[in-house]
Length: 357
Ligand SMILES: *Cc1c(COP(=O)(O)O)cnc(C)c1O
Picture 1 (tube, rainbow, N blue to C red):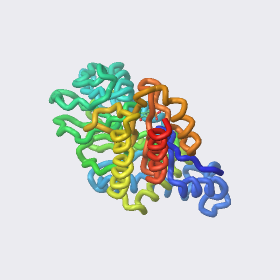
Picture 2 (picture 1 turned 180 degrees about the horizontal axis):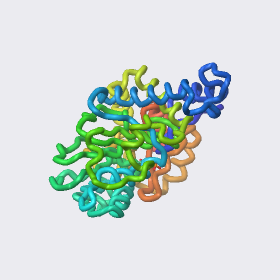
Picture 3 (picture 1 turned 90 degrees about the horizontal axis):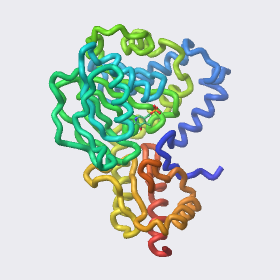
Picture 4 (picture 1 turned 60 degrees about the horizontal axis):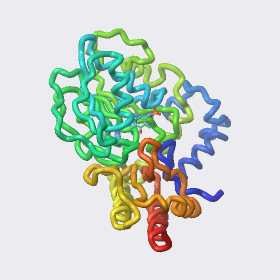
């Protein structure tokens, strides 16, 4: 197989060794004579997988013993858009949201179904090309919701406010990519398929004592407390997706943890953004100070170069570089598993385009 340089925004690249280990487990899981696809989720071996994945997630975030629980749930990040107001918004309450992109707006839409939802700042007017910074979180809100990395627009929150109310964050596309004080948050969630595993599972890290405050009756499958009580096995979990996520978490841990990932991610982003800024044929679309380390968005200054550029990067073995339809242009997603060598291949293509036109 001729392995591509995969710049896709998600589902996305995972470490090669994770692909191999996951493939092995499809044929024989832990030498059990059974495929990971046919083992009971109640089997001793899989219960151990779930426990390790939950513990390692907290460990990597520095949250072990801090009153947090990690859950591996289904329904994607989109399901959490709904579960969050169910669990955090009081019957007469209100929620405060930061509107920084398509995913933030999708979260707002679900919260509005529940009750009063205030958008305290938005960059929608400028097609979400920056992160609003001047806003006040109302002290009477039940919670504040933000999106750490805007996958589609290529912007990223570089710092987080000191919130007077519980802070909830969608970290789907930059979870485990940089060091953050995770203890500032009452709930963090991330669909696995951007930076952690295959599609089909969502990591939810929740502070236990923030739950149970709404006075609302919550259907079991939407109730974080039920999932905690059932140790993330309320119903059949996504066995294969949880296992593959665990393999990625182990890989991350063995390769220096979040700190080492952050260094690698900084180096990759610097390499690409330097070329975007240097090369007269290209322009970055996100405000410089808010540029995402994970998803770099850029355009050709003269669309006459489109055909040539597209042909060149495809011939160089690059995949998934086309921008989201709402932004156009290009998007290079450089998640944890992407080696800097792949970014160099892209930069070399950009340099060659400058010379050959
Ligand atoms: C991809 C993405 C989502 C949606 O995830 P699903 O798992 O498809 O529901 C939500 N938020 C962010 C930031 C994303 O990048």
